[in-house]
Length: 517
Ligand code: XMP
Image 1: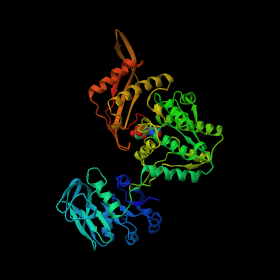
Image 2: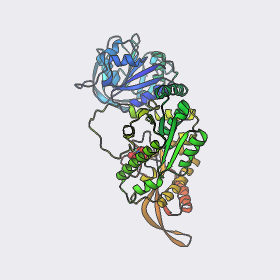
Image 3: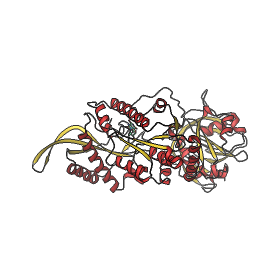
Image 4: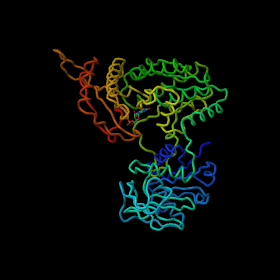
């Protein structure tokens, strides 16, 4: 087993980034919410070091979160970040008070003393740019601690107890606005906690293959393939682990983009030689959706139809003992919610929820420990083509939610598919595909008048959308230059019969959402 680090989450917005940085340093880590951590669970997890995250609470508030007191007696190296630093100070006998002036954003940290945390970063007198976000601050250190860095708003911005290997920083080393943060976290996990740094995708692949073989034994596994990154990587990994015990079912809704269905078949059946059922269910999906224009109803119908078809195909190949799913780490992290209460459903994204329960199968989820970009690295490692591994996110209901306000037909889907393909082709040629989170065309439910040659046209308008984002939760529209947009528009109007007008969507999220429906 690789050396591991435990991250205790106090609910900061950026706790996941700590995990990302630690894994980039080649060390396996997990995030556990503070209220689920105990001396026993820490011992069972067997970390070589513990990081206490930031969080929105104030140490001074009644009932605010704490690390289990026993953590400090286990002799493990500890790094407290922001709230994590404040609570560790308070729990070890120091003092935390509301700051006179809150520090948000860029600040300058001045190093006061040499410290293992800052090895290779700076020495006494070095000034570093750091990112702060705090109201409270430490005002008295617990016994055995010394100050190693200060900032204008935080006299104890970096502290150390070298003997006990306990450290704290008021700033956030995990965000990009703290340029030396990656090195600082690497110093903590390698130099202070002594982790080996052997968490690589090659190692993960071998370890996961062994795990899958042990879990599945001689059982049979079914995997739903969609052409997306996650299910593709699951399929390739499982095939390597259990060969012919795996059957993939590709339910073709007819709502895929241009060339995608063909690619799924050619990669998995022809290249990887995986047992693949390709079910063209486009007729069924279209008939179930006939006349429907309500976005949520469309999602529900697509989800339910998908499950029906999948079940039927699974039965047709003789069933299976296990269902493989591309669940990722962000889906399984239990985050700490301070606001409480369920959030409003804007869109129901989980189109195929409930499938394993209904089919009474056990789950195989080999990507449960990975972040999305780690899945991509694993996909490349397994030999999946770049276009598949680096593909933009694509919603389960596909093009069905990109023809708003009018009933879906083969004709309007085909028109949309052609416009979308031209747009993506131009984005790829311009070298912009990888800097954009998602780009697509939307077929609008209006016809507009145009003039082509000497005659009048009366055709659809289409909208182009492209956004940058880090997680899909917020997004900015992509600022293409006008010459690029003009080129795409004229290609679409010239090459796609049925479209005579193109617009560009400049709405960010919020207030818009990424998809139009
Ligand atoms: P919105 O439109 O909510 O989208 O800003 C955020 C991300 O989710 C994708 N999306 C979906 N994915 N089923 C999915 O699997 C859905 O029904 C669905 N709706 C939106 C969207 O493409 C974007 O990446």
